[in-house]
Image 1 (cartoon, helix red, strand yellow):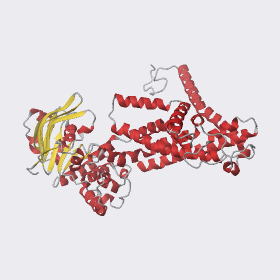
Image 2: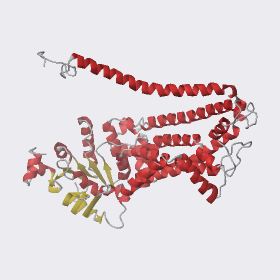
Image 3: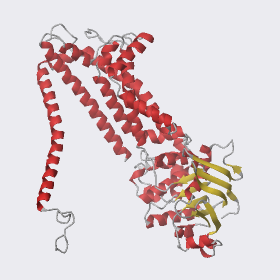
Image 4: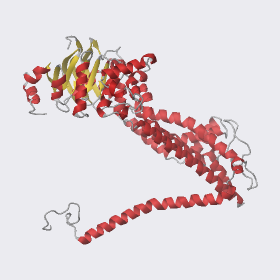
Length: 302
Length: 254
C-alpha cells in the first residue's frame, strides 16, 4: 500500500489497483453501459420503423369509409366494419367470461386453499397452460364448443375459445395482485370479526383491483390479436354482414388482415396495412387505458 | 381493576407444527384493567394473546389445546363462532394497519360495514364516539373523508384503536401497539390505555418494561413458553417472587 495517511475508499488506490487496471475497469464499465443502452434502443427503433412503414403503406386507405365499409372484391372499396364489430364483440364476450372465472379462481387459490403440494401443482399447471400454443386452444374449441356443445362456427364459440386461452393469464395476474396485499390488512379485518369472504370482498379485492384490472386488460388485448384459434374455430374470411347475435358467424381484425395479405392483388396489401394500423391503434388505446386506470387506483390506495 | 375474571386460561399449550411455543399456561385476566404480558422475544407473548381471540388458528400450521374461557364460556366450544368471538375481543396490531382504500371515517366504521351491520342513522354518532374514545377526534374531525393512510403513524394507530372500539368489544388485545411509534406518540397511546381501562379489559403485549410498569395493573412474565409469574405490577417490579423475573426486570438478560 501507499504511504498516504488516508487512502480514499473506493478508489483504485485503496483497492490496490494499478492505474492501468483502473483505466481498464472504467473502460469495461462504459462498454457495458453502452451495450445495455443499445439493447434498449435497437428493438425500439426496429419497432418504430415497422409501425411507421405499415402506417405509411396503409395511409392511402386510412379514411372513415375504410372503418365503416364492408369487404369488397375491389380493394379501393373494401372496409373493415364487420371485422371491427366482430373483434369488439369477441373481446367483450371473452372478458365477460374470463374475468369473473379468472378472478374467482385466483381468490380461491390465494385466499382459501391451503399451501401445499396440490396448490403448487395447480400453480405449475396454470403456468404451463399459459404457454400452450394458441392453435391448440383453437383445436380444443373446435371440438368442445363448435361440435360437442353444438355452438357451431359462431362468435360465442370463438369467444369461449379465447376465454380459455386468456384464463391462465388472468389467473396469474390476479394472483400476483392479491399477493401484494399485505397480510396485516387481512389480520385487521379478521380481528374486527369479518369472515374470510367479507375480508376478501371489503379489503383484499379493493386493494388488489389495480393489479387485477391491468393484468386482465392486457390479457384481453392479447385475445384481440389472436388469429390462429379463430381460424381453427371457423371464423369467416369474407363477411358482408354484421354479427347479429351470439350464434352469428363472424370475422375478426387479424383474420381480415390475414385474408388481405394472402390476396394476389397488390392493392389489398394497402388494405392490410391500413387494417394493421387500426388494430395496433386499438391495442395501444386498450393498453393505455389499463395503465391510466392502474395509476389512478394506485394513487387512491397509497 | 375489577375482581371479576374475564379470561380464565388453564393448561394452554400452543404451537406451530412440531414446535410447541406455549407450555401449559394457567392465567386469569381480570375485567376492566390493564394486564401486561412481558418477556423476551420469542417467549410466546404474541401467540398467547392470539389464542384469546382465536387469531392463532388462522395460521395454517398453528395448533392449540387447553381451556380458555371468556366469562365462563369455553372459547373453543362447539357453539362458539370464532368470527363472533373476535367481535367481542378486538385486536390492535404491532404496526398501524388502517385500510388504505378507506377514508378515516370508513376505517372507523370498517368493522361494521365489512360485516354488514352498519346502522346508517347511527354512523355519525359511532364515528364520533369511537374517535373520541381513541383521543383522535379533535385532530381529524375536519377531514374525516381523507384517506386513513394520510395520518401520521401515531394517529394511524389511534385510528386502528378507534376502529376496534367501534365494534363495541368487551376486551381489547394489543400486540406491541407502540413498537413502531416514536416516544411522543407512544405516550399518547399509553394515556389512552389508561383511560380505556375504566370500561374495557385490556391485554397488552409489550417489549418495554417501563411501559408495563406505567400502564398496567397486573403483569405476567413469560419466558421460553412458560408463564413464570403473574402478579400486581408493583409486586412484579419491586418484589418479584421468582429469581428469573427479578433478573429480567432488573435488566440482567433479555
